[in-house]
Length: 336
Image (cartoon, rainbow, N blue to C red):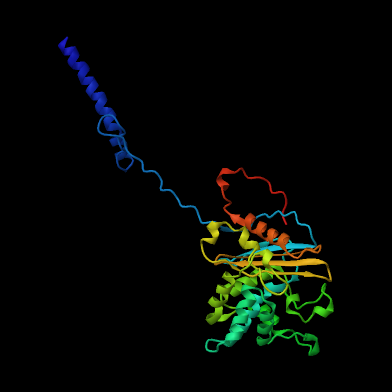
């Protein structure tokens, strides 16, 4: 019995040794290191490190479908990615609307840029410039416009308005023109009837934010004024006040927390076509967004419908959407 037991033990030892030698031999034959031993004889289990969690990108505005059940004569929007310069938006984003008070941010910028690094505006004119942006004050805008060299009667000498022409040249605008159809000829001398498209409006916003509009000395001042526009849509009046609404209301706190949002809206109920002319412009370090529209005023004295449309467009462009990972993608209802 003893020789047989000894033989059995010897065979078991050979088998165990063979199993233990297989990984080592494979490693040598393949030119690499021996495979790690997993559990059992020779040590504990090999621990494979879990991949480090990745931080999701902060929310921003990005191109995407926008669906608005709009009721009016004209609606369009455009979004510029300021890191690439790419503009996306509605199919009609090259069509125009009267700028109304949205243009005041340019008027102030154009005047201040002409002062250069050494000249200063009078205290009174600087205050009017501030009110023109913060409160959309018409008197202030008119005073700054005149100081910038604006012309209310371009037909008298056949020359185009220099303030508007500089905006076209400096900011690379392609669809902007001074007044004209469909506004009656009587309005041709008014800066507020400058016609501009949404794609030009986002170019204008980018031009103001990157410093070309106001120049290196005054850009921070202009942007600070745009960051402190004040007054709800209900506080707006015919000539001054109430311009903080629209796009900024449609942005989540997570975007607002990333830095200032610079805005300038324009709004006027016009008699000649019976419409509210409403424009929203907002700019950050990452993007520039404009929403422009015309819709029946119906005697209303507050452009709250337009304000809600602007906010809706901004909300729909937020990327990633809140809770997007938990939602099943759906086919958009429509694209404007």
